[in-house]
Length: 455
Image (cartoon, rainbow, N blue to C red; front, side, top):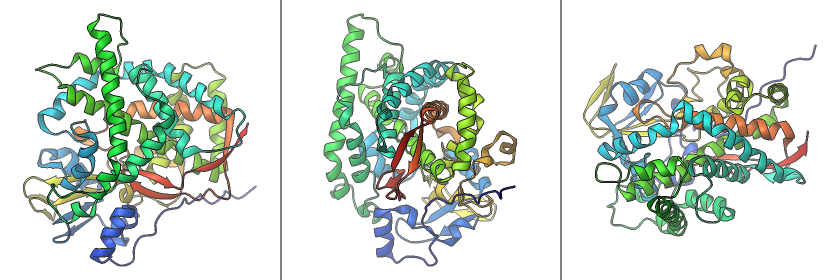
């Protein structure tokens, strides 16, 4: 009998063995915050730093502490200042950045779109869009999978939430996404130093053109749909129509509607795209895992199951996607700030402390996971799920601000993977040497060039 292969260990920064200097830290945070974390971040329940750039800091790795901050006492923890300085210039009062009454209005307005019934209803559009997209590989022998997954998830989002009626040309969309995250998606050193807001930030100046591109798409999309509604035309009962019906003095302002649309265009598809790319890469490096998934997909798709049932019928496919999100969490940091002094067990949290819940380190923590650096989808197989603490795995966050589109993303991912992997096999090339870099999402530096072959 052949020996079981050793699990694949995908590339990731090694934990630092000593703290960086202030100058080194600023450079690392700007270039790639994933390279900042040292051994204690992967071994300790929490780390409390009383002083430093940005003030007091708590790094929370313990699932109990994470539950306390994000759920049990969530009212005491607002969005952290540095996080808001990065995201608000892009998303303004979108769901990811809004707070207080604005957030409540937006969440209430969008909740009906993401009910289980509506998500099931999106499955057919997800399938048809994925099938159309797969045709581009018919005569291809290689592709940048990272870029392609950005385009695929954009196409799915445009069809399901906007009924294919997003203004603008999709051809330049992926380039502009990369540009926006490369510039405005970074922590600016001026923010770390606490510089006043009126001082210009170089990162944001560089990203203004890409941001204007997105803002124009949104304004044109809203205007076109609103014009049709005002004329009394039949319009799709989709996400865009629902938001526009909520417009008014007691609902959403037009600016809030536009902010939420750009949130879903700019962030809603980007996170799923990155996770899909990392999944295909990890499976290419672990062909013994890929074989199981190909067999599962082949069996499920010959049974003529409706696409909304695929996620239940393909547990191995789902597990591989979840394991890729564990190793490369699409949103690698969750940032909060203590409104008032607090205490958890023997940890004192002072007023104004920045509390970092880092899925990147929590998902790789040595006291929480066995063999945490390895790609082992079996962790998420149905028989093993009960062994996982709810707060040790946070790809979609937790608490009141958990990602509203989590179920949408899971269904989208399984359908897309099934369609692509039923027809094609994706393998690494000599130049496939991705390095994870945090620019809001966990991105593969240099893309994911891969060989594409017919199965």
